[in-house]
Length: 485
Image (cartoon, rainbow, N blue to C red; front, side, top):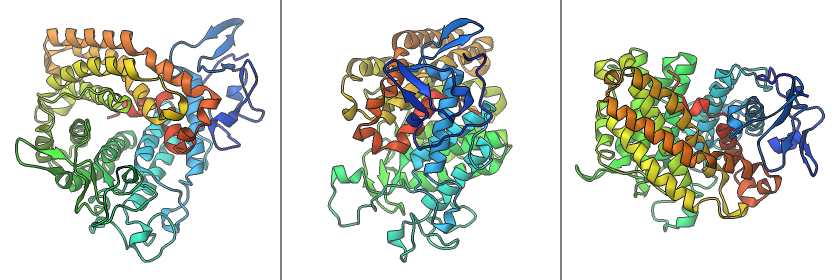
């Protein structure tokens, strides 16, 4: 029986993969001997994340998403530790022994670790705190993905040139990521005269705009969590370094390239990702707000980049039937609402008066997009589904209850947040509808991927790191969907 579940003071795992923490029989899953004592007494029914526990003689079952329960924190903790060990984050990147780095996965891993830190949790990894582990991930990403690949250097061993002085994408050592960060793909980027192969391009390196925006968000979250402005400054330098390379076209037809070469000299995929301008605009605004928080808004102004990308967002619709795209839209809507609520903290010069209009538009787009997702998603078998994309949706959906809480702030002083009372009523009504109509998908996604056999398929195993980190983020989304400053 479990008397009280609390955040783990430590968590030991013996094998890679959270599925190895449990023994299973026909009735469910039981903690493996030698695993954390906090797991003992838990029964995880087959195919579900609901947890039956006995508290003071009464049986209780957790409701809806595991992400609201203490056992979700334990599971997210285990996944985080497994990831840190598997990718050898503790090895200095200069040694060439640091594990492979992948920008999207690492961005979410940083936010996951910040979520664990925010919850007051400990991790069983090198006697460090979660926030210290996040610092190591950031250092590793900049040291590996901020440098050229081995194939472009002089035969160094590892995933990048390991010398302290060679191979940086940025020539300015005071701004090491000012020329962007590689994706971290296994294959080198397509050479100048090499023919385009749509399928092969997915496996090739380069720079993705939508990956960079996730890293920008992670850096802004790091700045707030550590109270260290250097991360916000790095984010601003990254924005200034990449924006004018990805942005192209004449006024009235501005757009972003989806994928650029590592040196940013040519577009590898010149077409625009559907939500890329939205992701960029919100990320830029987030960083600008963080800089204002540190009193650095004037010194590192991003207004020219923000105004340019605004032209790609204004009047556009972002609804989509893509599950990950809808998850990103919901997360962006939550960030926009945070910025509306923090209007007073940002000061008059730092507040964007167009944010309330954008918020209302995004919630309308969410209603359309989620209705399309609900019709078409989740019908295929596990081998034909990509877990990390579905976890992106379930993470974004969990921003909806957070936005409901933020409505309380909007209702208190709507004028100061830039909304009318009618606008606030609209926001409240749309959020209630979205939760009532679509929040069931969180449970659907969690339950589907909790089944052992579904995590034995090739689409899970071949994307182990990104699947597990996105899974853990969906279980504990705080560090990603909360704006921490």
